[in-house]
Image (cartoon, rainbow, N blue to C red; front, side, top):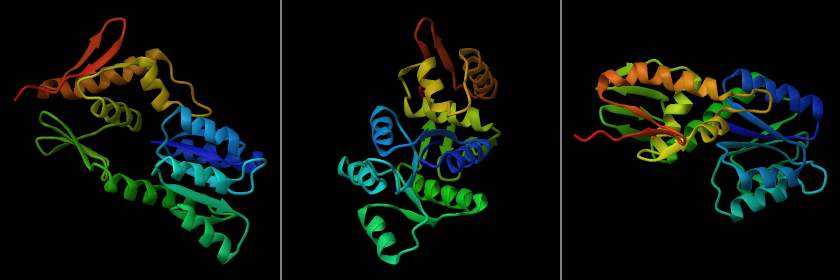
Length: 223
């Protein structure tokens, strides 16, 4: 899961990003609304953590543009302004939740999980490939009903491959889904994750093929 944190307070931004990153999320940071808008246009995010009092383009304008383009990702507003009308305005613009600064990181994590869970359930809830079933809401992978233990990175790679079932995906595209503001993922690391997935899936007739010079292909097995 990839989260964009939009916050101009350097200390708060660093602490928030580091905490979410340690929790297993891929995290990017935008210090201004203009940068956040550009980053969302250029890449895919699963959630937006949005401050309102930003220099230049404020958080409300970022949210307005996001919803105008029919982007339905969950948005959690964070603000020091404790004003009912202010919160109502943000929620009416399309925000999904609101947190008052200063906040406890444990609560931020809980709200993040809840928003991602609700959003996932509102989309397609399961992905499948042959005997493999992936429940996005429960974050559970199984073959013939038997669970498969996956690390967070393995899960993210598998979900990305399933969402591109039958298509060749480049290693660089996989890296893009895994990297965050502080963590660099190498091509060798991607190969390691693919190798681990193969060791867990090959025996069940689910194969990740290497397309030399291009990337990887997850084939949908013929029944």
